[in-house]
Structure formats: structure tokens, C-alpha cells
Length: 429
Ligand SMILES: NC(=O)c1ccc[n+]([C@@H]2O[C@H](COP(=O)([O-])OP(=O)(O)OC[C@H]3O[C@@H](n4cnc5c(N)ncnc54)[C@H](OP(=O)(O)O)[C@@H]3O)[C@@H](O)[C@H]2O)c1
Image (tube, rainbow, N blue to C red; front, side, top):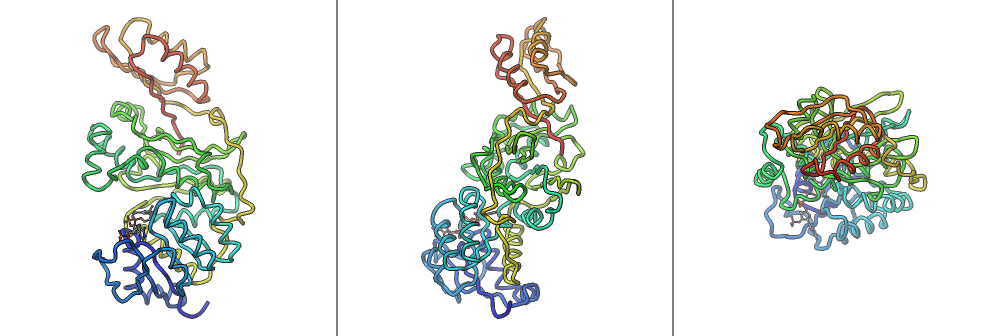
């Protein structure tokens, strides 16, 4: 690979602004790494008049993102965002014009990744997305290039900094989900519309990409069961701690004897294990790589610098000639696996019942659980005055989720509980 490597940049926001700054100020170092000069040849954003951190006035400004595909760039960086237009059209047009593409856009790749990977291969150009899953953590390269010898049995990740910040703050301050979310929004750690984060959708976008890399399936949002963190109460966080656990929103993908289990859900993880100790806005992924064992990747999953770092690393890889399929296998070899049924992964469960403290209540709950073969490992019941509401909290032995659900349905239908029971699975990490 020789000659100047030309780059066009779509998006000059948090990520694009950082990418422009590094390309314009760290040219010599990047040239050493890439083995050739990198040159930013065109930029595009929505508002040309908006002040930018780095002087880009000397660069050609392109009004329509899709027109970057018609420039003389060798590579187009898409950091506009959004799963539809104009980002999608820009990536398609760039690949069709045989330009390499680097994107940080997990939402877009979660829905269109398999098709775009096939298009990139057909056109003979690389498509890279290190920044799209867990920001600055090199987990995409880790799964695509490094952990390939023994295959992957399971990946579990804290993939959304907003949720991890909220859960960490709830534990540290004893405040409710709503209070901590409002504070996170005021401090800029959560979006004005937080649903994509707290509802689990953003974690699912990233999980879809990691699953594709780990298991050779096409990214498929339909295959992922998604539950967010809105229902997690401060009581659950406090009780979990009493049992020596923390509650984390996890993206999980694992092989089971009856198919691939892909889910986003809050889970209890034992204190002292790698995922339990990941606090605040940090992300982490534990990848179980067969006989090679588990590997933990941890770091900043979002923010200008970590994300810029991942985008620049993709650019440099491509500039020095690294190619290969986007998801580590030819797109034609990405095949869906059967979705594992809920009972495919028996595990312990945390259960909380809000009941009136009357004689026989505990025996009735235990009876419903026993009828479904759910046995109790440990339990907390705080005494209050007879007849007052009380929480009965328990941790079960390993059992299939379906058994627990049937028992909870029966318990919920009785008049002894004051509200729907809470069930949170317990994950090894
Ligand atoms: N921020 C992070 O920490 C992070 C982490 C990982 C991945 N990502 C991903 O990186 C991508 C960019 O995120 P970001 O945080 O940098 O977003 P952002 O700050 O909102 O920046 C978006 C940029 O795109 C431009 N833009 C928006 N609509 C456009 C249009 N129709 N035509 C041309 N330009 C348009 C905006 O132009 P103006 O500046 O003129 O408004 C802005 O420069 C997203 O896919 C995101 O999911 C972000």
C-alpha cells in the first residue's frame, strides 16, 4: 500500500469532531502506523455555519452525505448515526463506489449489517465498525481476529454506559430509578428520550453485532429477547447486595444444546466477579473462548475520545491494507441458528414478593415453587407488624426460567401478593 490514503468524513459531532481533530493534528504519527499519509479530503454535516472545535474551513464541504461517495476518497467514515437515511444511503453508495467504509453506527448495522457486509465483499472493499460495540474497547477486533481458535461459547457484556451509570448510582445513593435518571439527564449522561438506553434497545444493537462476530449468525434484532431496567427498584438493588450480588443490565449471547440464546436483561452478578465490579459509565465484555478460557475486556464504551480511538484504529488498519469480511466470515457463511427456548439455560433466580405479613403466606409461596420443582437456596423476610406489607426475597437453586414463570403466575393469581412478583436471573460472569 503506497500513496496518500484519502478520507471523507460524514458527521462532525461528538465522534466526527474527534476524528477530524485527530486526522488533522496527529498526521505524522498516524502515517507511521499506516505506512502512508492519511489525508482528510472532504467533510459533511448538517449545518455548515455551526462552530467546530477544529478548523476545517480549508476542507471541501459536501452538502449531501451521499455525495461523499462521488469524491476521490478511498475511505468514507459515517458518524452521522440513525438506522435509516442519510447514513444508510451513504454507506451503500460508498461501498458501490468501491470505497472502504468505517462506521460507529450500531443501530444501522444491527438491522442492515448482513446485507452491507455482503455488498462490501461483492465490491471488494472493507467495512469496519470497531466503535459500534462498546466504544473504545477493542472487542470487535478481539472477536473477529483474536479469539477464533476454539470458538466462542458465550459472551456477556455491560454494553450501555447510561444504564450502568443509573444502576451504579441507585446502589450508591439509595435513590429510585426515576430520580437517578432525571439527574443523569441533567448531567448529560442520559438522552432527553432515554428509551433506547433504559429499554435495552441500544444494548441489543451492540449484542447483535457481537453475536454475529462470535457465532457466525447474521445480526438479527428479532432473535434477541429484550428487557430494560425501568422495573428495577432500589429495594431489589439493596436485597441483591445482601445476597452478595449487584444488578447489571447485560447483553448475553450463548450457545445452548437447543440453540443460540440471545437476550438483554437485568441480571444479578456476584460481587467480586469481573462484571460486578464495572461501575458507572464503563462497559465490559466477558468472552468465553472455549478451551482458551474467559477473557474480560473493559473500558470506556462511549464518549468522544474512546469512540474516536476506535474509528481511527479502523481507518489505520484499512490504510495499511488489512481487509477481510466485516463479521470475520464471508457474508454467505453467516447462518441463523435456532433460537434457544427460555428453558435452555437453567440458572438461579432472584425472586421478590410483596405480601401482607400473615400466617401461611410463606408456606403458600414455597408450595407453588415446589410444585414447579423450584427449590430455594436462601431467603430474607424482614418482620414487621402482623398484617403489614413485607417483602419476601429469595434466591433459588438452578432451575429453568419456564418453571419459575409458571410458579410466579400461580402466586400472582392468589390474593396474598400485593403486586406482581419480581424475578431477575442470576448470571455467572
Ligand atoms: N457519542 C458516542 O459516545 C458514541 C459512541 C459509540 C458510537 N457512537 C455512534 O456514532 C455515531 C455518531 O454519534 P455522535 O454522538 O457523534 O452524534 P452527534 O454528536 O449527534 O453528531 C452527528 C453528526 O451528524 C451530522 N448530521 C446529522 N444529520 C445529518 C444529515 N441529515 N446530513 C448531514 N449530517 C448530518 C450532524 O451535523 P451537525 O453537527 O451540523 O448538526 C453531526 O455533525 C452514531 O451512530 C452513534 O451511535 C457514538
